[in-house]
Image 1 (tube, one colour):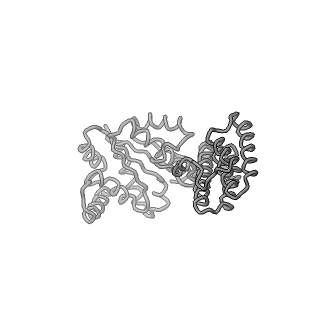
Image 2 (image 1 turned 180 degrees about the vertical axis):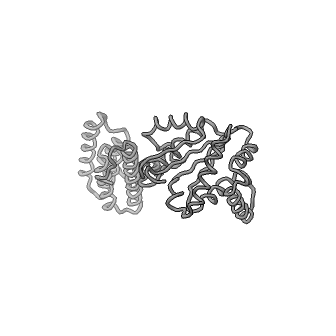
Image 3 (image 1 turned 90 degrees about the vertical axis):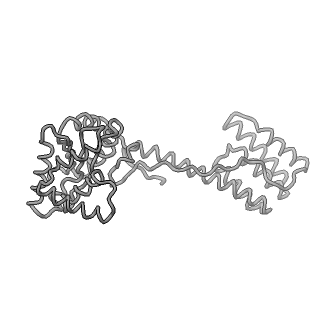
Length: 316
């Protein structure tokens, strides 16, 4: 990821720093394991290469100096091992302002007197690799509700939506393609509403080429949550046909759902990518019926439904 960046994205920069640190830790831990393996296998030459690489990554790591001191001594290079001790002293003083630990000093004395025996340097067990944080950069994909902790930059707009939607029968979020309408609605508005009003039933859908079928499939889990797969298919087709002709009306279906949710008196209907009603649905009659149904449901007084539509500016 060297040289890669996302312009004006503090969230990506923060994630990149954390991810670089995680990968650095993983390399360090891997080198520790490989050095211990070479000590057990008496492959001191390879272990020396690993220890030097470890010190190149973290020259202030005292354990790395002990590794290299032991590996050099085990190869008969006692003077080089003692020189490494002096190097360790200089690095620790310059980088951390400290002296070598008693463990490092004791190892130096073992090497100086020739008492060093074959074995591993005492080293803390390597911690398992840390789980990387989720990447905040979604590319061309919209932020969804689970992405709410990563969604930033639209706080004011989201707050205005949270204030407006509960009081208005119909709210439209309109903007150019790719401007973040879906992200604002799902990762912003819906995430906040679920926190503030956890009992509020929320139905989400995209019109697709069959808007009534899409609506029926979105409503049915709240109407009949225990249907078998076969019954669900039949009921969704039947409900879609009924909604098209207004029998039952969407307002009646809404009240039926609310009767099963006594903790609230409203249902929120969210229609994302509303322009699909025009770009994917080929029948003018179907489009008009769907619009009439939606307007009738939100215009009934007092309306139990609140609707939010997100659509691209200039379409429909």
